Image (cartoon, rainbow, N blue to C red; front, side, top):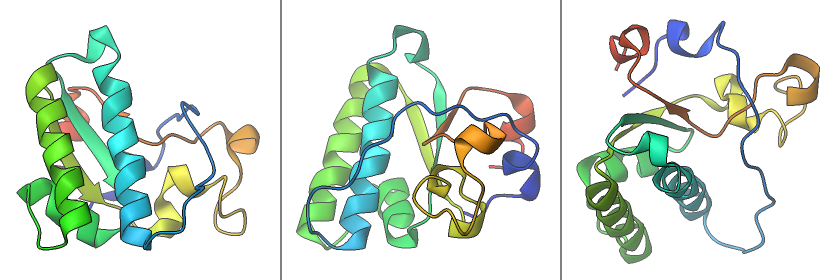
Length: 139
């Protein structure tokens, strides 16, 4: 479930979507909702239909639950089911992978001490998508 350096390093990233968390929930639910938003964004993009998706998340409980498709925590289970329904309806093949916060390009805006901001280095995104053989080898 861990990513190799080759998947993240040296890749040009673009900011697609960013917003502040407005609710007070456990961090695994906030991270789960943000990765669900990435999956929803892919569902609204016609060119993404039927593709394999690599979704990066720095919360291991979300990664494990979403890859397995179930968990004991009811609110997270609801997100698992929503992800499954979205994937089935759009023909997506999502895989969630764990990435440490210090290597997560999506955390650059929220944690300025860890990574330079996207405006400084043009590398920030909430997800990786596509069917590149180079990236697929590292899954």
